[in-house]
Image (cartoon, rainbow, N blue to C red):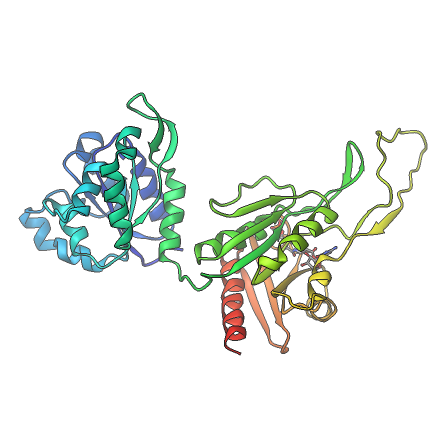
Length: 401
Ligand code: PMT
């Protein structure tokens, strides 16, 4: 995901400096080449050797180090970076940069870079709410510097409140978003995910094996690319990505109400949810007793939400999924036409490494003009990115029509 990206990680002096080690691990795991710059106070909290070992690059600590400056000078570091992230960022370093002070390796390099700079502040709550700090942050934001706000919680200084360094995963996500194309900015995309549950009685329901992974990968990727994301989700064991508007539902009827209630806000809808096709004709108010050897349930068809969207007079760009166990292209083409969708993502759910629950998928994308694109086995994250490439391209083409 961050392959071939050069990231400079600036670590300043705060107790949260140890969390920068975890951030470094997330970045290197995602393929980034990370160069660490530590201020002298940061070195009071964590030894440079830790960062050097985990980044496999020399750690920069001094501006006037002759050997380091000959091997890779501060200007070269500023030039080669795709992004700078300062985590934790103290009130001191933010104040210095906001005032144009460049008196050490970190502040000098930041002053010299044209790459995006992302601050993850961590400090005492009274420092964080101090009007002088607020002005400094505002000033930097105005100049295009990015911030990952701190969390609320128990602070190392004994106070309670805002000032706790954001989780390494949150900072990582902000880095990925800052490096992603913003080709979905201005769009509102609704994504449905997970299964629905059709209740038989208070303790039993009909459902399926959908984990929500495909839909949540789409939500995460759309958000990274600048879209406002509405995630209508059936019951799953996943957390919605930060910033995504989650609307939790259980049954197909609830999903239909949520989708139809918000479709007017959307430029595109992607229906990755595995909606139950049938629901019990009647829900028993009490637990059905085990009396006879056999029990028959009368089932009725659920509303077809995608077809309902396709029938709207003015409708957003519509992407449906097709979960098939054979004749993929033929059945998917039928769904594209019958449901009046703009694009269908067909996956063969009979394969162990694709479809329900697993982290990977293999798909065929079908378009209204007859184009078919085969996507070989890949992570659901990678497939989500490809689907969104098409949503971005097709919606941009519509705008220009
Ligand atoms: O959640 P995961 O574990 O990651 O698994 C991913 C997935 C296999 C669920 C996903 O990739 C997928 O294929 N989702 C669609 C599943 C499905 O219901 O397919 P379908 O062929 O039955 O339906 C076709 C389309 O109509 C789908 O977009 C579906 O959301 C929609 N539909 C179906 C029935 C219904 N009553 N209303 C609908 O809107």
